[in-house]
Length: 325
Length: 275
Image 1 (cartoon, rainbow over the protein chains, first blue to last red):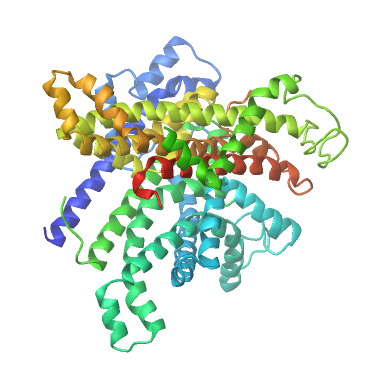
Image 2 (cartoon, each protein chain N blue to C red):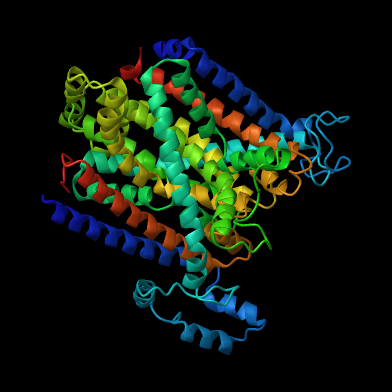
């Protein structure tokens, strides 16, 4: 299969996943007690039969389920995720307003996780079984056993409450009205705690993955050739081993994106980061079901797009990859 | 069995895990007898530090004994962890067995579904599920089971795929056994080891997930759990570190114990990993 047709097949798969997400959402709506009409009537403060009936007719709730489903799919495909019960704004607008902050935080966390993980993995792989190697294993065991939001609170306790080194809340200093570089610096400082908290959990897995890959690649013939040519040990590690060991990390980043987003919902809430994670919490506490569901749809589609990108990147980075299926 | 116990108990890590886990189970079972007054009773001033008279781990924002809260919280964590895993294993074994045994379009469909669950952010889906079903103990359990069963199904399917062509299965077929009987009495017992290892790890993950849900206020509002204790302590953390640290430690120790046990089970049940 050529690369173009592989990309085509992956595109089709992404579209299918999106359709599945929309279908699932339609059935999730049916899970909640009451329908849009009951909620609207509740907000209006009164409800006689005629009013409910007119509401149901207005929202098409009196039509057969397949018709409703078709209308729902059409609406979502056009970016209409309904209106927020509480904010009385289109759900998509509310989400898009917060989305950049979440993307920023997740991208930063992913970079920190990969950079830190690769570094730790290289240290561990240099001498398997050494103290450095063992401590990476022990740390990752501890991180896997603690709730990520609690890790964030502990970081806040140490670095904000006790040491007062880093700001504990928000994305920038309230009322400071920084502009330009000063503002970027301010945001960066606010991003450290939530970003590193989010990254630490994944850093452990990246470290393990890098370690295994480095040990595996170090055994292959082309590395021996490089050594035989007299290239220094550091150059062999960086230019020959690491480059090839990094390729599996691309796929891994895609596979972990869904978990990253879930963790981000919690970490954002700990640090009051104004992204869609705090928005999801607001949606839960105000019982704003359309908004909560909209967040699910948007994050699911974004993660599947990210997976599409990593799959394509992988097929370019490793031309040996089987382009089947 | 004897062989299994010998390997399982030969290393210290699984043994430590087992001892800690047994202690937590004992605390959970004894809580209503030792602390009959329940976790919501106010016993004194709020935010008393650990070691204050009669308060082993201090009191919380409302002046409730946190030791009692931790003991009752163990009940919720274990209950949710174990029941949601059992449900997930039930669904996963059934669907994974059918897919692996029959193959074909059923198998294709199931694999697409498990892939789908890997790609979507399952914690966000879980939030939607629990919020829409209304937060309660049962919706937490159902929600966690619904987003985790594909993991089990994948493992079971793989095992069935490799076992279905073996001689003992062919022999059973020659004897005239029906498919259902072959699946449950012949193949499934042989596929059990990896299922047990996966489910032991899932209990710990489910406990972490439950704590995250109740931290966000999506737990049962009538029950005190470790996650809701942390969620309720957020404003107090600045002056009373123990309100946040203690419930988190409880979660970490429990999950660590379960992971230790899972590690031991993996070594004991998986001959390839024996050293």
